Image (cartoon, rainbow, N blue to C red; front, side, top):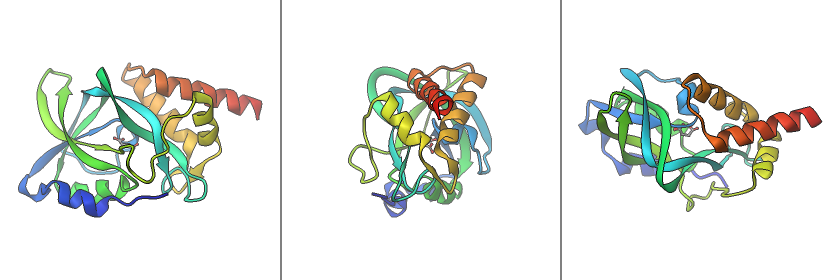
Length: 190
Ligand code: SIN
């Protein structure tokens, strides 16, 4: 079920108090930068891993045939690579709309590549949101992604573009790469 978080996010942090704010992206925010930013840097956060456990009813799927997109899962000691963007607070109007299906803004420490640690925000879709799909095998995840598309395009392109972006930054993510390999296999078979 779709779940619109825009109003909740507006009440979570009063961003107009700040001129510039950092936001950490780990999924499509890495490769689809459709917003203005002041600077952007490679970065990571700790204690999380990417998982294709969130339903996409608005971007890469439809309400009747949801796709699967990334959220973060708590894993002690884990490191999750991404991109950090310093943005003006007004950009969150757009980001809240883009990430509206189940994602809430959370405060986090962001580790920049030059070892600076800054505070910022990250969008996480937690297991209690109505659009959450949860764990499934790599093959089940890949099959659902293979058969989904929505207003933002084919769900499989979400995976391929992210995997390419990770390679471009010389980063690896076993979960993402396993789903990518399963998708390539499914395309061969079809
Ligand atoms: C993100 O990229 O940080 C959030 C998930 C997504 O939009 O793919």
